[in-house]
Image 1 (tube, rainbow, N blue to C red):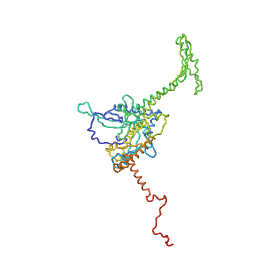
Image 2 (cartoon, helix red, strand yellow; image 1 turned 30 degrees about the horizontal axis):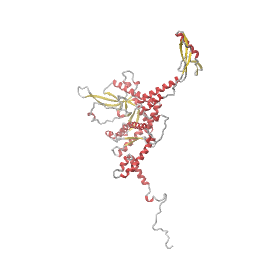
Image 3 (tube, helix red, strand yellow; image 1 turned 90 degrees about the vertical axis):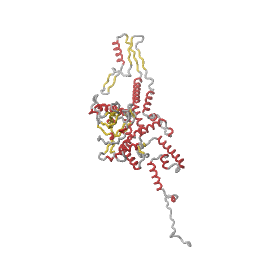
Image 4 (cartoon, rainbow, N blue to C red; image 1 turned 30 degrees about the vertical axis):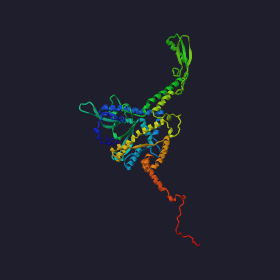
Length: 525
């Protein structure tokens, strides 16, 4: 368990005495196995991991569709905004009931986590990888001789090569009872360089050498998943999973439209050849001779420079030759008209809109013919409001990667204790940058409304409200903002000239009056 990192052990005094007949719901998609298993354990492990590896490959292949790529780009661009002057994410510690020095260290360590992730440059790629794959894993690398240095590197791990395993052991309620509680014994990760897919299985029973992997301590890996599980809560799914069926339907519909256009676009002739009373074999031979005589399908072969006769092949645009027995009508040539509804695309547009809805992106954003108007925030449609809420949910879930990395960093450097993290975690907030004109208009209106409320409440300062309360609840300033603004106000007060000199002309130094001037003329002169 000492390979690839470290392990942090927490106290579990209360957990040993707390039991329940219901199993906890875990949203990490870990493989649950019985303690002490043998070869069958590895077969079950590979079966589940193989399914997740195939899902990841499927999700990544979905990005080859232009509609899916445009939707994912729109989601990532809305969720992650990278600017030159501000970090993409900020840690807010206003709600923590801790000394200011500890809060400052927490913010500094969070900035170090962003540097380890190179989030200012790789933020888009990291969020895209998490959104598409549905899972994100990093290996925490530390200096084992000097753990106080904290995290040295966060290295990305391919989710197709890593699986989480959770071992349980059964403990019977009473002697002779058939019902038993499942007690968690151990949690760890399994890493295989070859990956957990179909290539690692050689027979129905499986081989231990090809399926087992390197056992890694749980705390050596920080992971974050989408939180979307299948109906059995065994496999983590991506947000793209619900768009898989509409995407396949759209592809098949587009292919069908193309095939119909090609096959029904040209007009073709139908030859009804009168074969009289000829036997079947001779009638087919006669019909074939007529086809060869009337066909002219010589093709130039560019590779050899020769003329090639392809009259023996029949394509979808060839004419039809049908035999006709003796009767009232003899040989007849008619024409088969081309398709009359080649311009109808309602069925394709239906599946395209269905795909857009499954991706949770407003259709107006993905349709190029839809104009983009910059209006007031009150003109935002309901779809934009729903999309903004969806982006906030994604950011909240993605922030788990910051929580887990920050937890290990603070504990390793001795800033907090392990048992203090749960209380700190609930009050930490992460503010993502916003890059949206509608958001900018909304912020301008919010500032205008706040100043209006401030003007109304200013008469009650000192009697019912304090200035600190107004800064936090009316102006919604953070502790850092309050401190920075106070410093700026004090600095501006120092830079201002004294009041007695404010009326003087700029650049003119007032002259001092000497009570005994040396060159004063006599009164008698």
